[in-house]
Length: 534
Image (cartoon, rainbow, N blue to C red; front, side):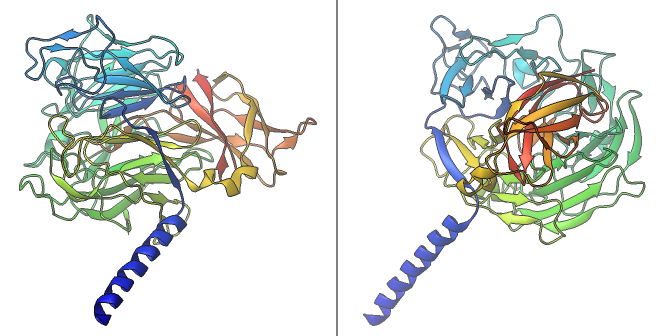
């Protein structure tokens, strides 16, 4: 009896210690919406501070109805031929309101990118959507903007599991896709151009889908698929460099970890790429849900004359994790699972602990474990930086249709994760942007006016963050650019003036709308949107 009592006491102490440990870890979670109506497979934040959530059309009934009289009729849809359910919605984080949007063709595993005018370009998908090009021109939260499907232009090749990246001139390159080992452009140039590299790295479980594409400040593209990477000149459509292979197995769909390009700063001549996590080769073929994911990360200076991968390990193995660039230049790794692979019902052991990747720390000290969530976010989940510095977490549907009675059910809840910089103990450091231009030209000098509760000590950074298109554990078009600034000076009215210089060209920051953050001692302001133009 005494031994049983001791055993129970031990369990209670361990439980209390676990709770204490969780409470001690940085970051906080909050439930924003209990039912968004759809499970978001693709997510993007617009310049009006609204968020577009997008699933696929042939999913059957969602939990949000379209407006009366706006049903979709598709005789080829095996799930629902007369469909009055929304498969895309607009979310307003300021009110937590959801508005249904109408998408007509199948967006399953599609790609996207914001154009210079702030319009969301959305491409490809499956079935009737595989060659489709769509646009969403955002509006104020109270408006009625909606999806428009283009009838006068389509993709040359079908694009399912492709990646989009905006280019220095404001056009968009669309890379790869299932059975499409080519690239093409929007606006269209000359049709599709073969990229044999994508075929060469394809293995018998694919592993070349949703390639990681980063625009380097040289103007060339860093394209990574499976375990290899190259540098691509999109002007001549030529490969200009091949990088050493990355150890640790495949890294792209269906074995995907994630990837991010670290903040561009200084003279913008250096670009560092990080690739983290992934499934072990064979897990997808064998449909193994319990094969441990690997937690290794490779980091490479893509602009170096002699680039090589430097390896480090995350505290957890992770597949399907999202890497979100924070306004500070740190990277949040969130969502995913610790075993299995991508695909329907092919993963287990959700990875509830986010990680903070601190690029400036030495190898071995870069990862910090953060406060865990409680909602598994596995296959088809997303994470996006919001203008207030929080990270919106959405989606997770590891099932072919919506399934709510399962070990890992279809997830309709929207949550926000607040990094430690939003804690109450740092509120006195948080700047407020009082004045900033709405439009800035390349190389232009301009002033940002801020107020801060406590006296400013040191440099206040002004950093531009793009609004990427997040899907399948990669944020297409993600970018953070740290501007050249002078020390802040008092403006005589209790605030401070920071003199800034805009990025020099579209290779450093392609034209478009950017969230502009003032960052004081690691604490970001609420962003104001700047339109960067040539």
